[in-house]
Image 1 (cartoon, rainbow, N blue to C red):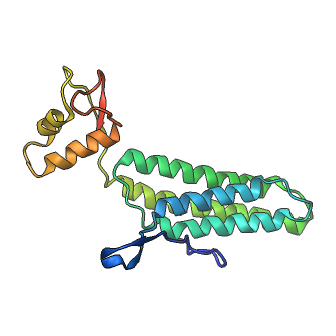
Image 2 (image 1 turned 180 degrees about the horizontal axis):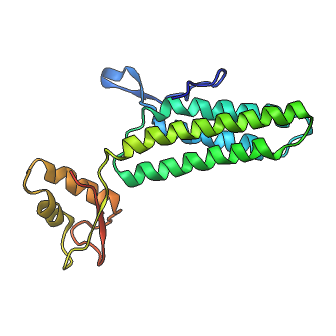
Image 3 (image 1 turned 90 degrees about the vertical axis):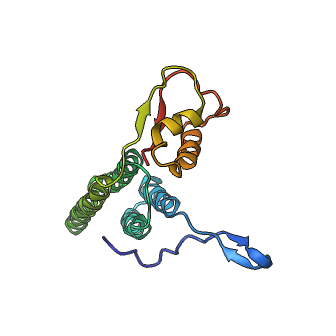
Length: 197
């Protein structure tokens, strides 16, 4: 993985109050940090700039993409679908910056630098995809389950995870959260998403 770019500050953790009133640092969500860096990279090359600022903006975008690889390594996805959606979002950001790299004109030296930037971004994209493809292959896929009648989420959790009674409460909570159930005692008609345990 590519290391963080110089000059990019880490995300500031939120401060909370822990046991006995001591201040504690809340854990920083690494995916939120990645998303913020991706959005900033896209913004750097999508903003209208004066002539001559394009190279600096492109350099900033490349630095931000490189910085996103560090928190990306710390992200723990629950499912293949979640990780694949993340991979698509990262690809979009890298492709946007790569297109900006080859869209600019200028002197021969500038064109050569932009081509080199495009090649570096292609290598970064390949490295990220190889890493994520490996991680995706080890994640479970979200199942789509359609109960035959309107039952409670608890009954579905028992049916799917009842072989391990300790897994039932976690399965129930995941079904409720994943499907945004306002009333888990009666599931709506139709399919629901379930993460295997």
